[in-house]
Image 1 (cartoon, rainbow, N blue to C red):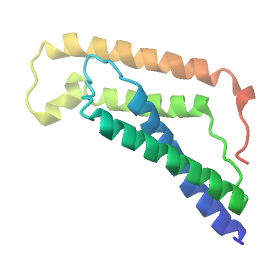
Image 2 (image 1 turned 135 degrees about the vertical axis):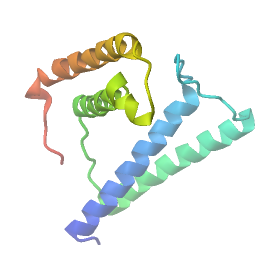
Image 3 (image 1 turned 90 degrees about the vertical axis):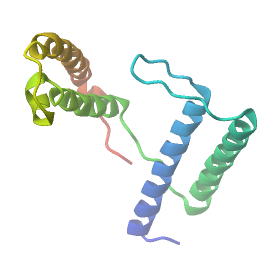
Length: 144
């Protein structure tokens, strides 16, 4: 029914849709607690139930598409996903050190002594996680 290029394109689009729907499903059920991020749960019980039901229905539709079109599942490495996200976060943190912040205006001379060590500790922690993840390449597989 679909040529190889079409099949690949449809598969990728539906995988991304599934990933986003699963993420939204988790967000509906989890209430993340952070110090600098507060997610306001501004959904009513009726809205939450309606959205959850619709997400479930859409995930079922993806199953139907897979069955009818013989789509093959893709593979995503949790190891690489985590390492990639942390690498971007590490780079973002480098931009909030005292030196780069001067691009936004004059900085207090004490900022370098207060902010930079905190940012360095967080960035070092992110690097340690990435190094731990990089230590085991046996988990790598090629996408189907």
